[in-house]
View 1: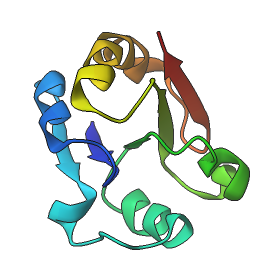
View 2 (view 1 turned 180 degrees about the vertical axis):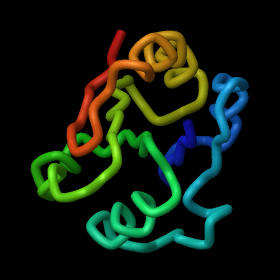
View 3 (view 1 turned 90 degrees about the vertical axis):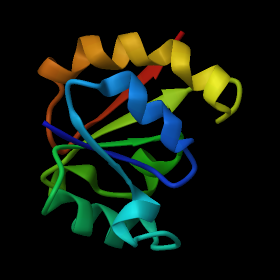
View 4 (view 1 turned 135 degrees about the vertical axis):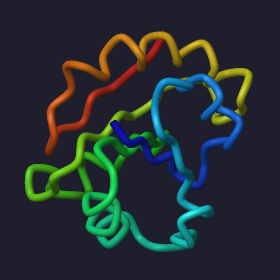
Length: 106
């Protein structure tokens, strides 16, 4: 399973998902691309898009994209606030559905 971290997430969070292939939006050269186009690019190469953008599921028609979305809800997008969510993300990865957003919070 291939994971893509949004550009607003510290790339060091990838270390928490060692059993998966993880890339970041900037590494892919997609920094600054709007969410609709970003999801279109991402669905061609990734299975899951991880973001902190709480509005993504309201702004995009997710069922049209062949990629699952995980929205991390933390007090900030600092690594220290996001790391505690990683075990929950790992738990749900096998059950998430493409075309849907799943919210992960403490």
